Image (cartoon, rainbow, N blue to C red; front, side, top):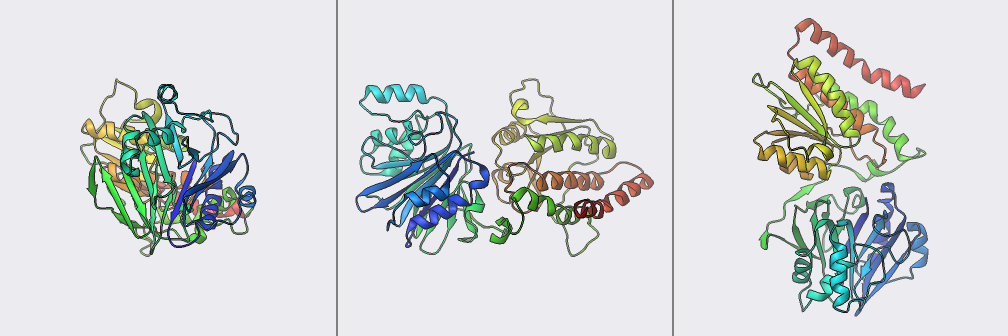
Length: 436
């Protein structure tokens, strides 16, 4: 997944954008770049380099707003010309994009016939040219008109020389706005913003936002909506590697604490108020679904729930299940997603809700998209996970599934007590394993 950052405020944008890009390096990338608005022009620097190398390439810039990007190549090989930002013909409009424009070839041919000049192989480059095509005097309107022609997924941040604003939009890809004092931030992931602000606004599907230093305006289907500001509970230190060799090792060593918090409901100092009944006495079947490691947790969840609840349980891969026309509606459903932004999992949640099945979401990120779609949400509270390979949050999902299984159990009291006692020994055994 590509990384997006943006800043607009009273401070020089360059060091802030570079630091935010560094905080997104855990996602992986093959190239990076940035665009800073100077007086009457855009200064764009990008290449197939690491963020540290990019910082050495860029001279001191005084502009107070700009955008940045780390790219994982999908359309177009890793190269300087394919790196983001992508610009229009006059290099007055710059765009960073995460997602896939599925009809870009058709749009590209149309724009070429209208005289636009392309320099990259990317699908993203159609966006600045479409914005250029529709621009008269209002950047927000031009972005909205351009996106109406686009099919696919996107999180975008747009910058134009001479306009003191950033325009952002999303569809099927996450984007968050950080709220500061006389300054605002944009990012594809919360860890990029830690240390700058704990106040954020999550963009909803098809939202278009105008971000200025002291204000934010969001439109949904052409109507202005009141931004819903939330506080991020994570602290900047949680997103640091500390003395560990890498984030994956750090997160593995955080597992005992996470599992203890989830498997010890008797600890009154650590209540879990979100732990709700996943089903009731009328529940006859259950569906558990997710993608990647969350799907593997769902497979284990099937075993847990069939043993403890004595009901048939299906574990499904969300990316395939969402296209299955032969869907038998279960009486209860659990959606598993670490980020709360997994597009295929969100698609199944919408599908199940439309079919009349209330979905309980299990996620690690408060106020993520799934928490606003699902009927109920339960949080693993594992803290940020920056390693691409899931360890801590996978274990947290399993612990929470056991906790839910116990809360809804239909097995005998003696057997239930045995399971509970076994689970209480898990934390100490994990700690001993790590100590050894």
